[in-house]
Structures are given as structure tokens and as C-alpha cells.
Length: 135
Ligand SMILES: [Zn+2]
Image (cartoon, rainbow, N blue to C red; front, side, top):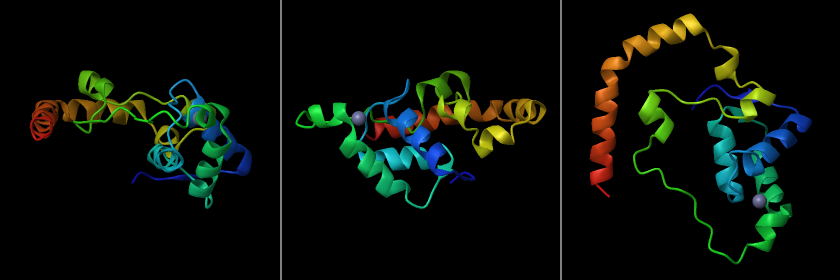
């Protein structure tokens, strides 16, 4: 679990909206939405309750509630972006409200870590192939 940024009510509303229905949003269910927000580095005490309520109030989710909801499974545990570039892309919500990961970012430190982790890229690829084969 990364360091989490505690956010205020107005920031929480923005994060819920951006992660649920923003440019990278996929109208996931309430629990999945809460987990995504935690993974992206944000927290507030009523996060899960608010995420469940937000989805219940989402017009598109209610209109298409009878259609089976599926999300893309990550078989390898890695995103296509990270498999291609060896790092994660910045999520749109981090532009509006910087997460601790973005606040503490240092280009020099990042460059050094990227060079040091080049050897791990092949291991990462092998691990993904092994995980994929187990399905
Ligand atoms: Zn929705």
C-alpha cells in the first residue's frame, strides 16, 4: 500500500467523479471504485461508503444495471503501459489532486531507479508469462 493522501470533502467528490466516470473511468462498482482510489494513493474515512453511494446515484450505472458488468482482468498483474515502458503513467486524477507519489517525485531519483531496474524488466516479463500460463 503506497502512502495515502487524506483529502477534504470537495477533493473526495472530484476524485470519485474522475476515477468513476472521467477519461480513464469505467463505471466500476462501488467496492471496486473504492479500491481503485486507494491504489491511486487517496484516502478519507468514508471512502467505501461514499463510493457505494456514488455508484448508486450514477445515472449511467443505474440505466445499465441489468447488463452484466465486467471489467478488464489484469492477468499478469501489470498494465500494458508498464509492460511496454517499464513504468506507470500518471493518472488524470493526479493532475487535479497530486498524490504523495507525485508530490515526492524527483526526476533524478526516478532516472537512477529506472536504470537500476532495467535488469528486472526481463524478470518482470518472465513473471507475467508464468502468471498468464497458470490461467
Ligand atoms: Zn457510473
